[in-house]
Structure formats: structure tokens, C-alpha cells
Length: 205
Image (cartoon, rainbow, N blue to C red):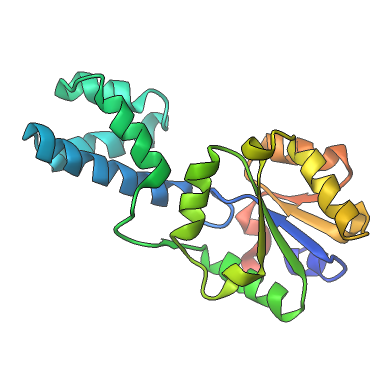
């Protein structure tokens, strides 16, 4: 069954941000670009070499200890960890984040059908808000209600249930789009229908 078919009988749609509405790497790679530029200015080290290294490491092993690996490779002071972390929270991106094309079409369809759209996102609230502010929503932003799980200090399942309660709806009225097994488990705790794979909504490609 396609996401469109599942959506027909639903009233509420809940989304994560990273790798659901847009690729997480689109934000991170721009942060790494800005960090490499900062190091070039501060230490006169080649920004392109630093960026190429960070891209390769991220592609191979993800974000794990990326600053430490970069610092060791280019002999950077540990104090630059602060700048690295700060950029993740408040970077002014060179390019806006773009929604997956199929998700943009899907969200626009939901708005046309007067469905309710929620974003429930985990991670550093300041960083997640920064992503939201720098996303090209194509006018959709006024139809979004956002919850930051780390700020609320609540599990996603509890936030999902609160959304349902506030709207006087039951589990069969909602559809969750997540990014990992944890999102799936949180949805299943309160019997919410869950979708993870972008392949599910190929109708919108």
C-alpha cells in the first residue's frame, strides 16, 4: 500500500526532520565547509584539504569522533572543538536545505486536503530549529507545528499521544514518518502506523 493510500483515512501526519524531510548530510556537509573555511582563516591551513578529509570520513564512518580525527590529521588545537560544535547549532548556511522532492509534493498534497502536519524531532533543539529556519519550505512553514523532544524531555511516544489527545483523535487517525528503528518502536508503543522508507512514496517522484 502506498503512502498516499495510507494517508487517505488519516487526519494527522507526524514527521522527523533528518533523512525524512531532507538529507541530514545536506546540513552537515555545509557545517564542515564553514568549519574548514574558519580553520583556513585562523590557522592558514588549506580549507579544501580539510573539507575533503571530513567528507571522506563522514561518508565512511559518519559523525563519530569526526572532530578528533580531523584535529589529529591537521594538527588542530582541541579548543576548536567549541567552534565545531557551535557551528552545528547556529551555522548560517551558504545554501538553503531542500526537501526531498517526493516529500515536498506529499506535504503540499496534505495542505491541500487540510490535514494537520507535525514535526517531532530529536537532537539538540537549537540545532534542529536552525535547520528548520534554513529550510526552503515553499510556503509550507505556516502549516507546521513543531515539537523538540530534547527540550520537552519526553519520549516521542508520549508526545505523539499528547498530539492525539489535543486533537481528540485516536491512533488510527495518525501516520508517522521516521528515520530509524527507535522512531518505529516509539510509534508502535501507541499503535501508530509507521513509514520509514522513501521507496514507499515513489508515487510522488
